[in-house]
Image (cartoon, rainbow, N blue to C red; front, side, top):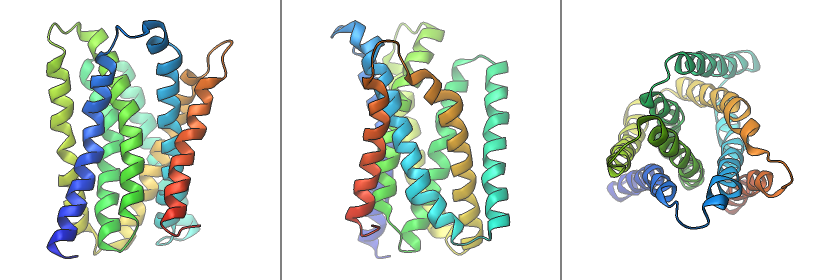
Amino acid sequence: MTEPGVMYLVAIALIAGMAMPAGALLAKIDNLQPQWLEQEIRHGVMALGAGALISAVALVLVPEGSSHHSPLTGGLCLLAGALAFMALDRYLAAHETPASQLAAMLSDFIPESIALGTAAALGGSTLLIGVLITVQNLPEGFNAYREMQSAEGHRRPSKLVLKFAGMALLGPIMALVGYYVLAAYPLLIGGIMLFAAGGILYSVFQDIAPQVRMENTWLPPFGAVLGFLIGMIGYMLEGGG
């Protein structure tokens, strides 16, 4: 990839990461239709993230990761990812701290940023992966901010937004690691993608999907459909369909 191409990769990774502080800023708005923000909008944003996560698994991580593995090794990588995220989930539940929310958010963002860099090195669809990471980081930043703000009772919530902005820099760093270091090892990259896919699937059905549904309203689950639709359209526009 040429130097402009590397800068393009860095820009995509940074924009995807900045969706986290953008979600936090959105969560700070509590004086516009507060009931909607707390109920329909919040549930809809969570569903949007779930749909984007599932589309990332179905359209990017599993297809590209499995191309470098046999069914046996690919299945083991996927299972390992789910088990690892389950262990992390149990650890975070046993240590109720604000930092645990950051760890949960980064557990998705870091491996996907690595996958973004390796996809660029191998000629894959960086734009699609970047869009999917962006769409999922927005609701994750939204929910992580609100949970941390509630737990810590921050008097200066802007500090949380700055923390999220700092974490966005991990995107370009991990993307460059994937591009320059890991791209020469397609078997390892495929394993990372499948590992991340297993962890994402666990997270969606353990943490996000159970919280989406609300009584007497059917709009929030539609957010999941919308999130998946975004991924599908991007996949088709890049010639995947």
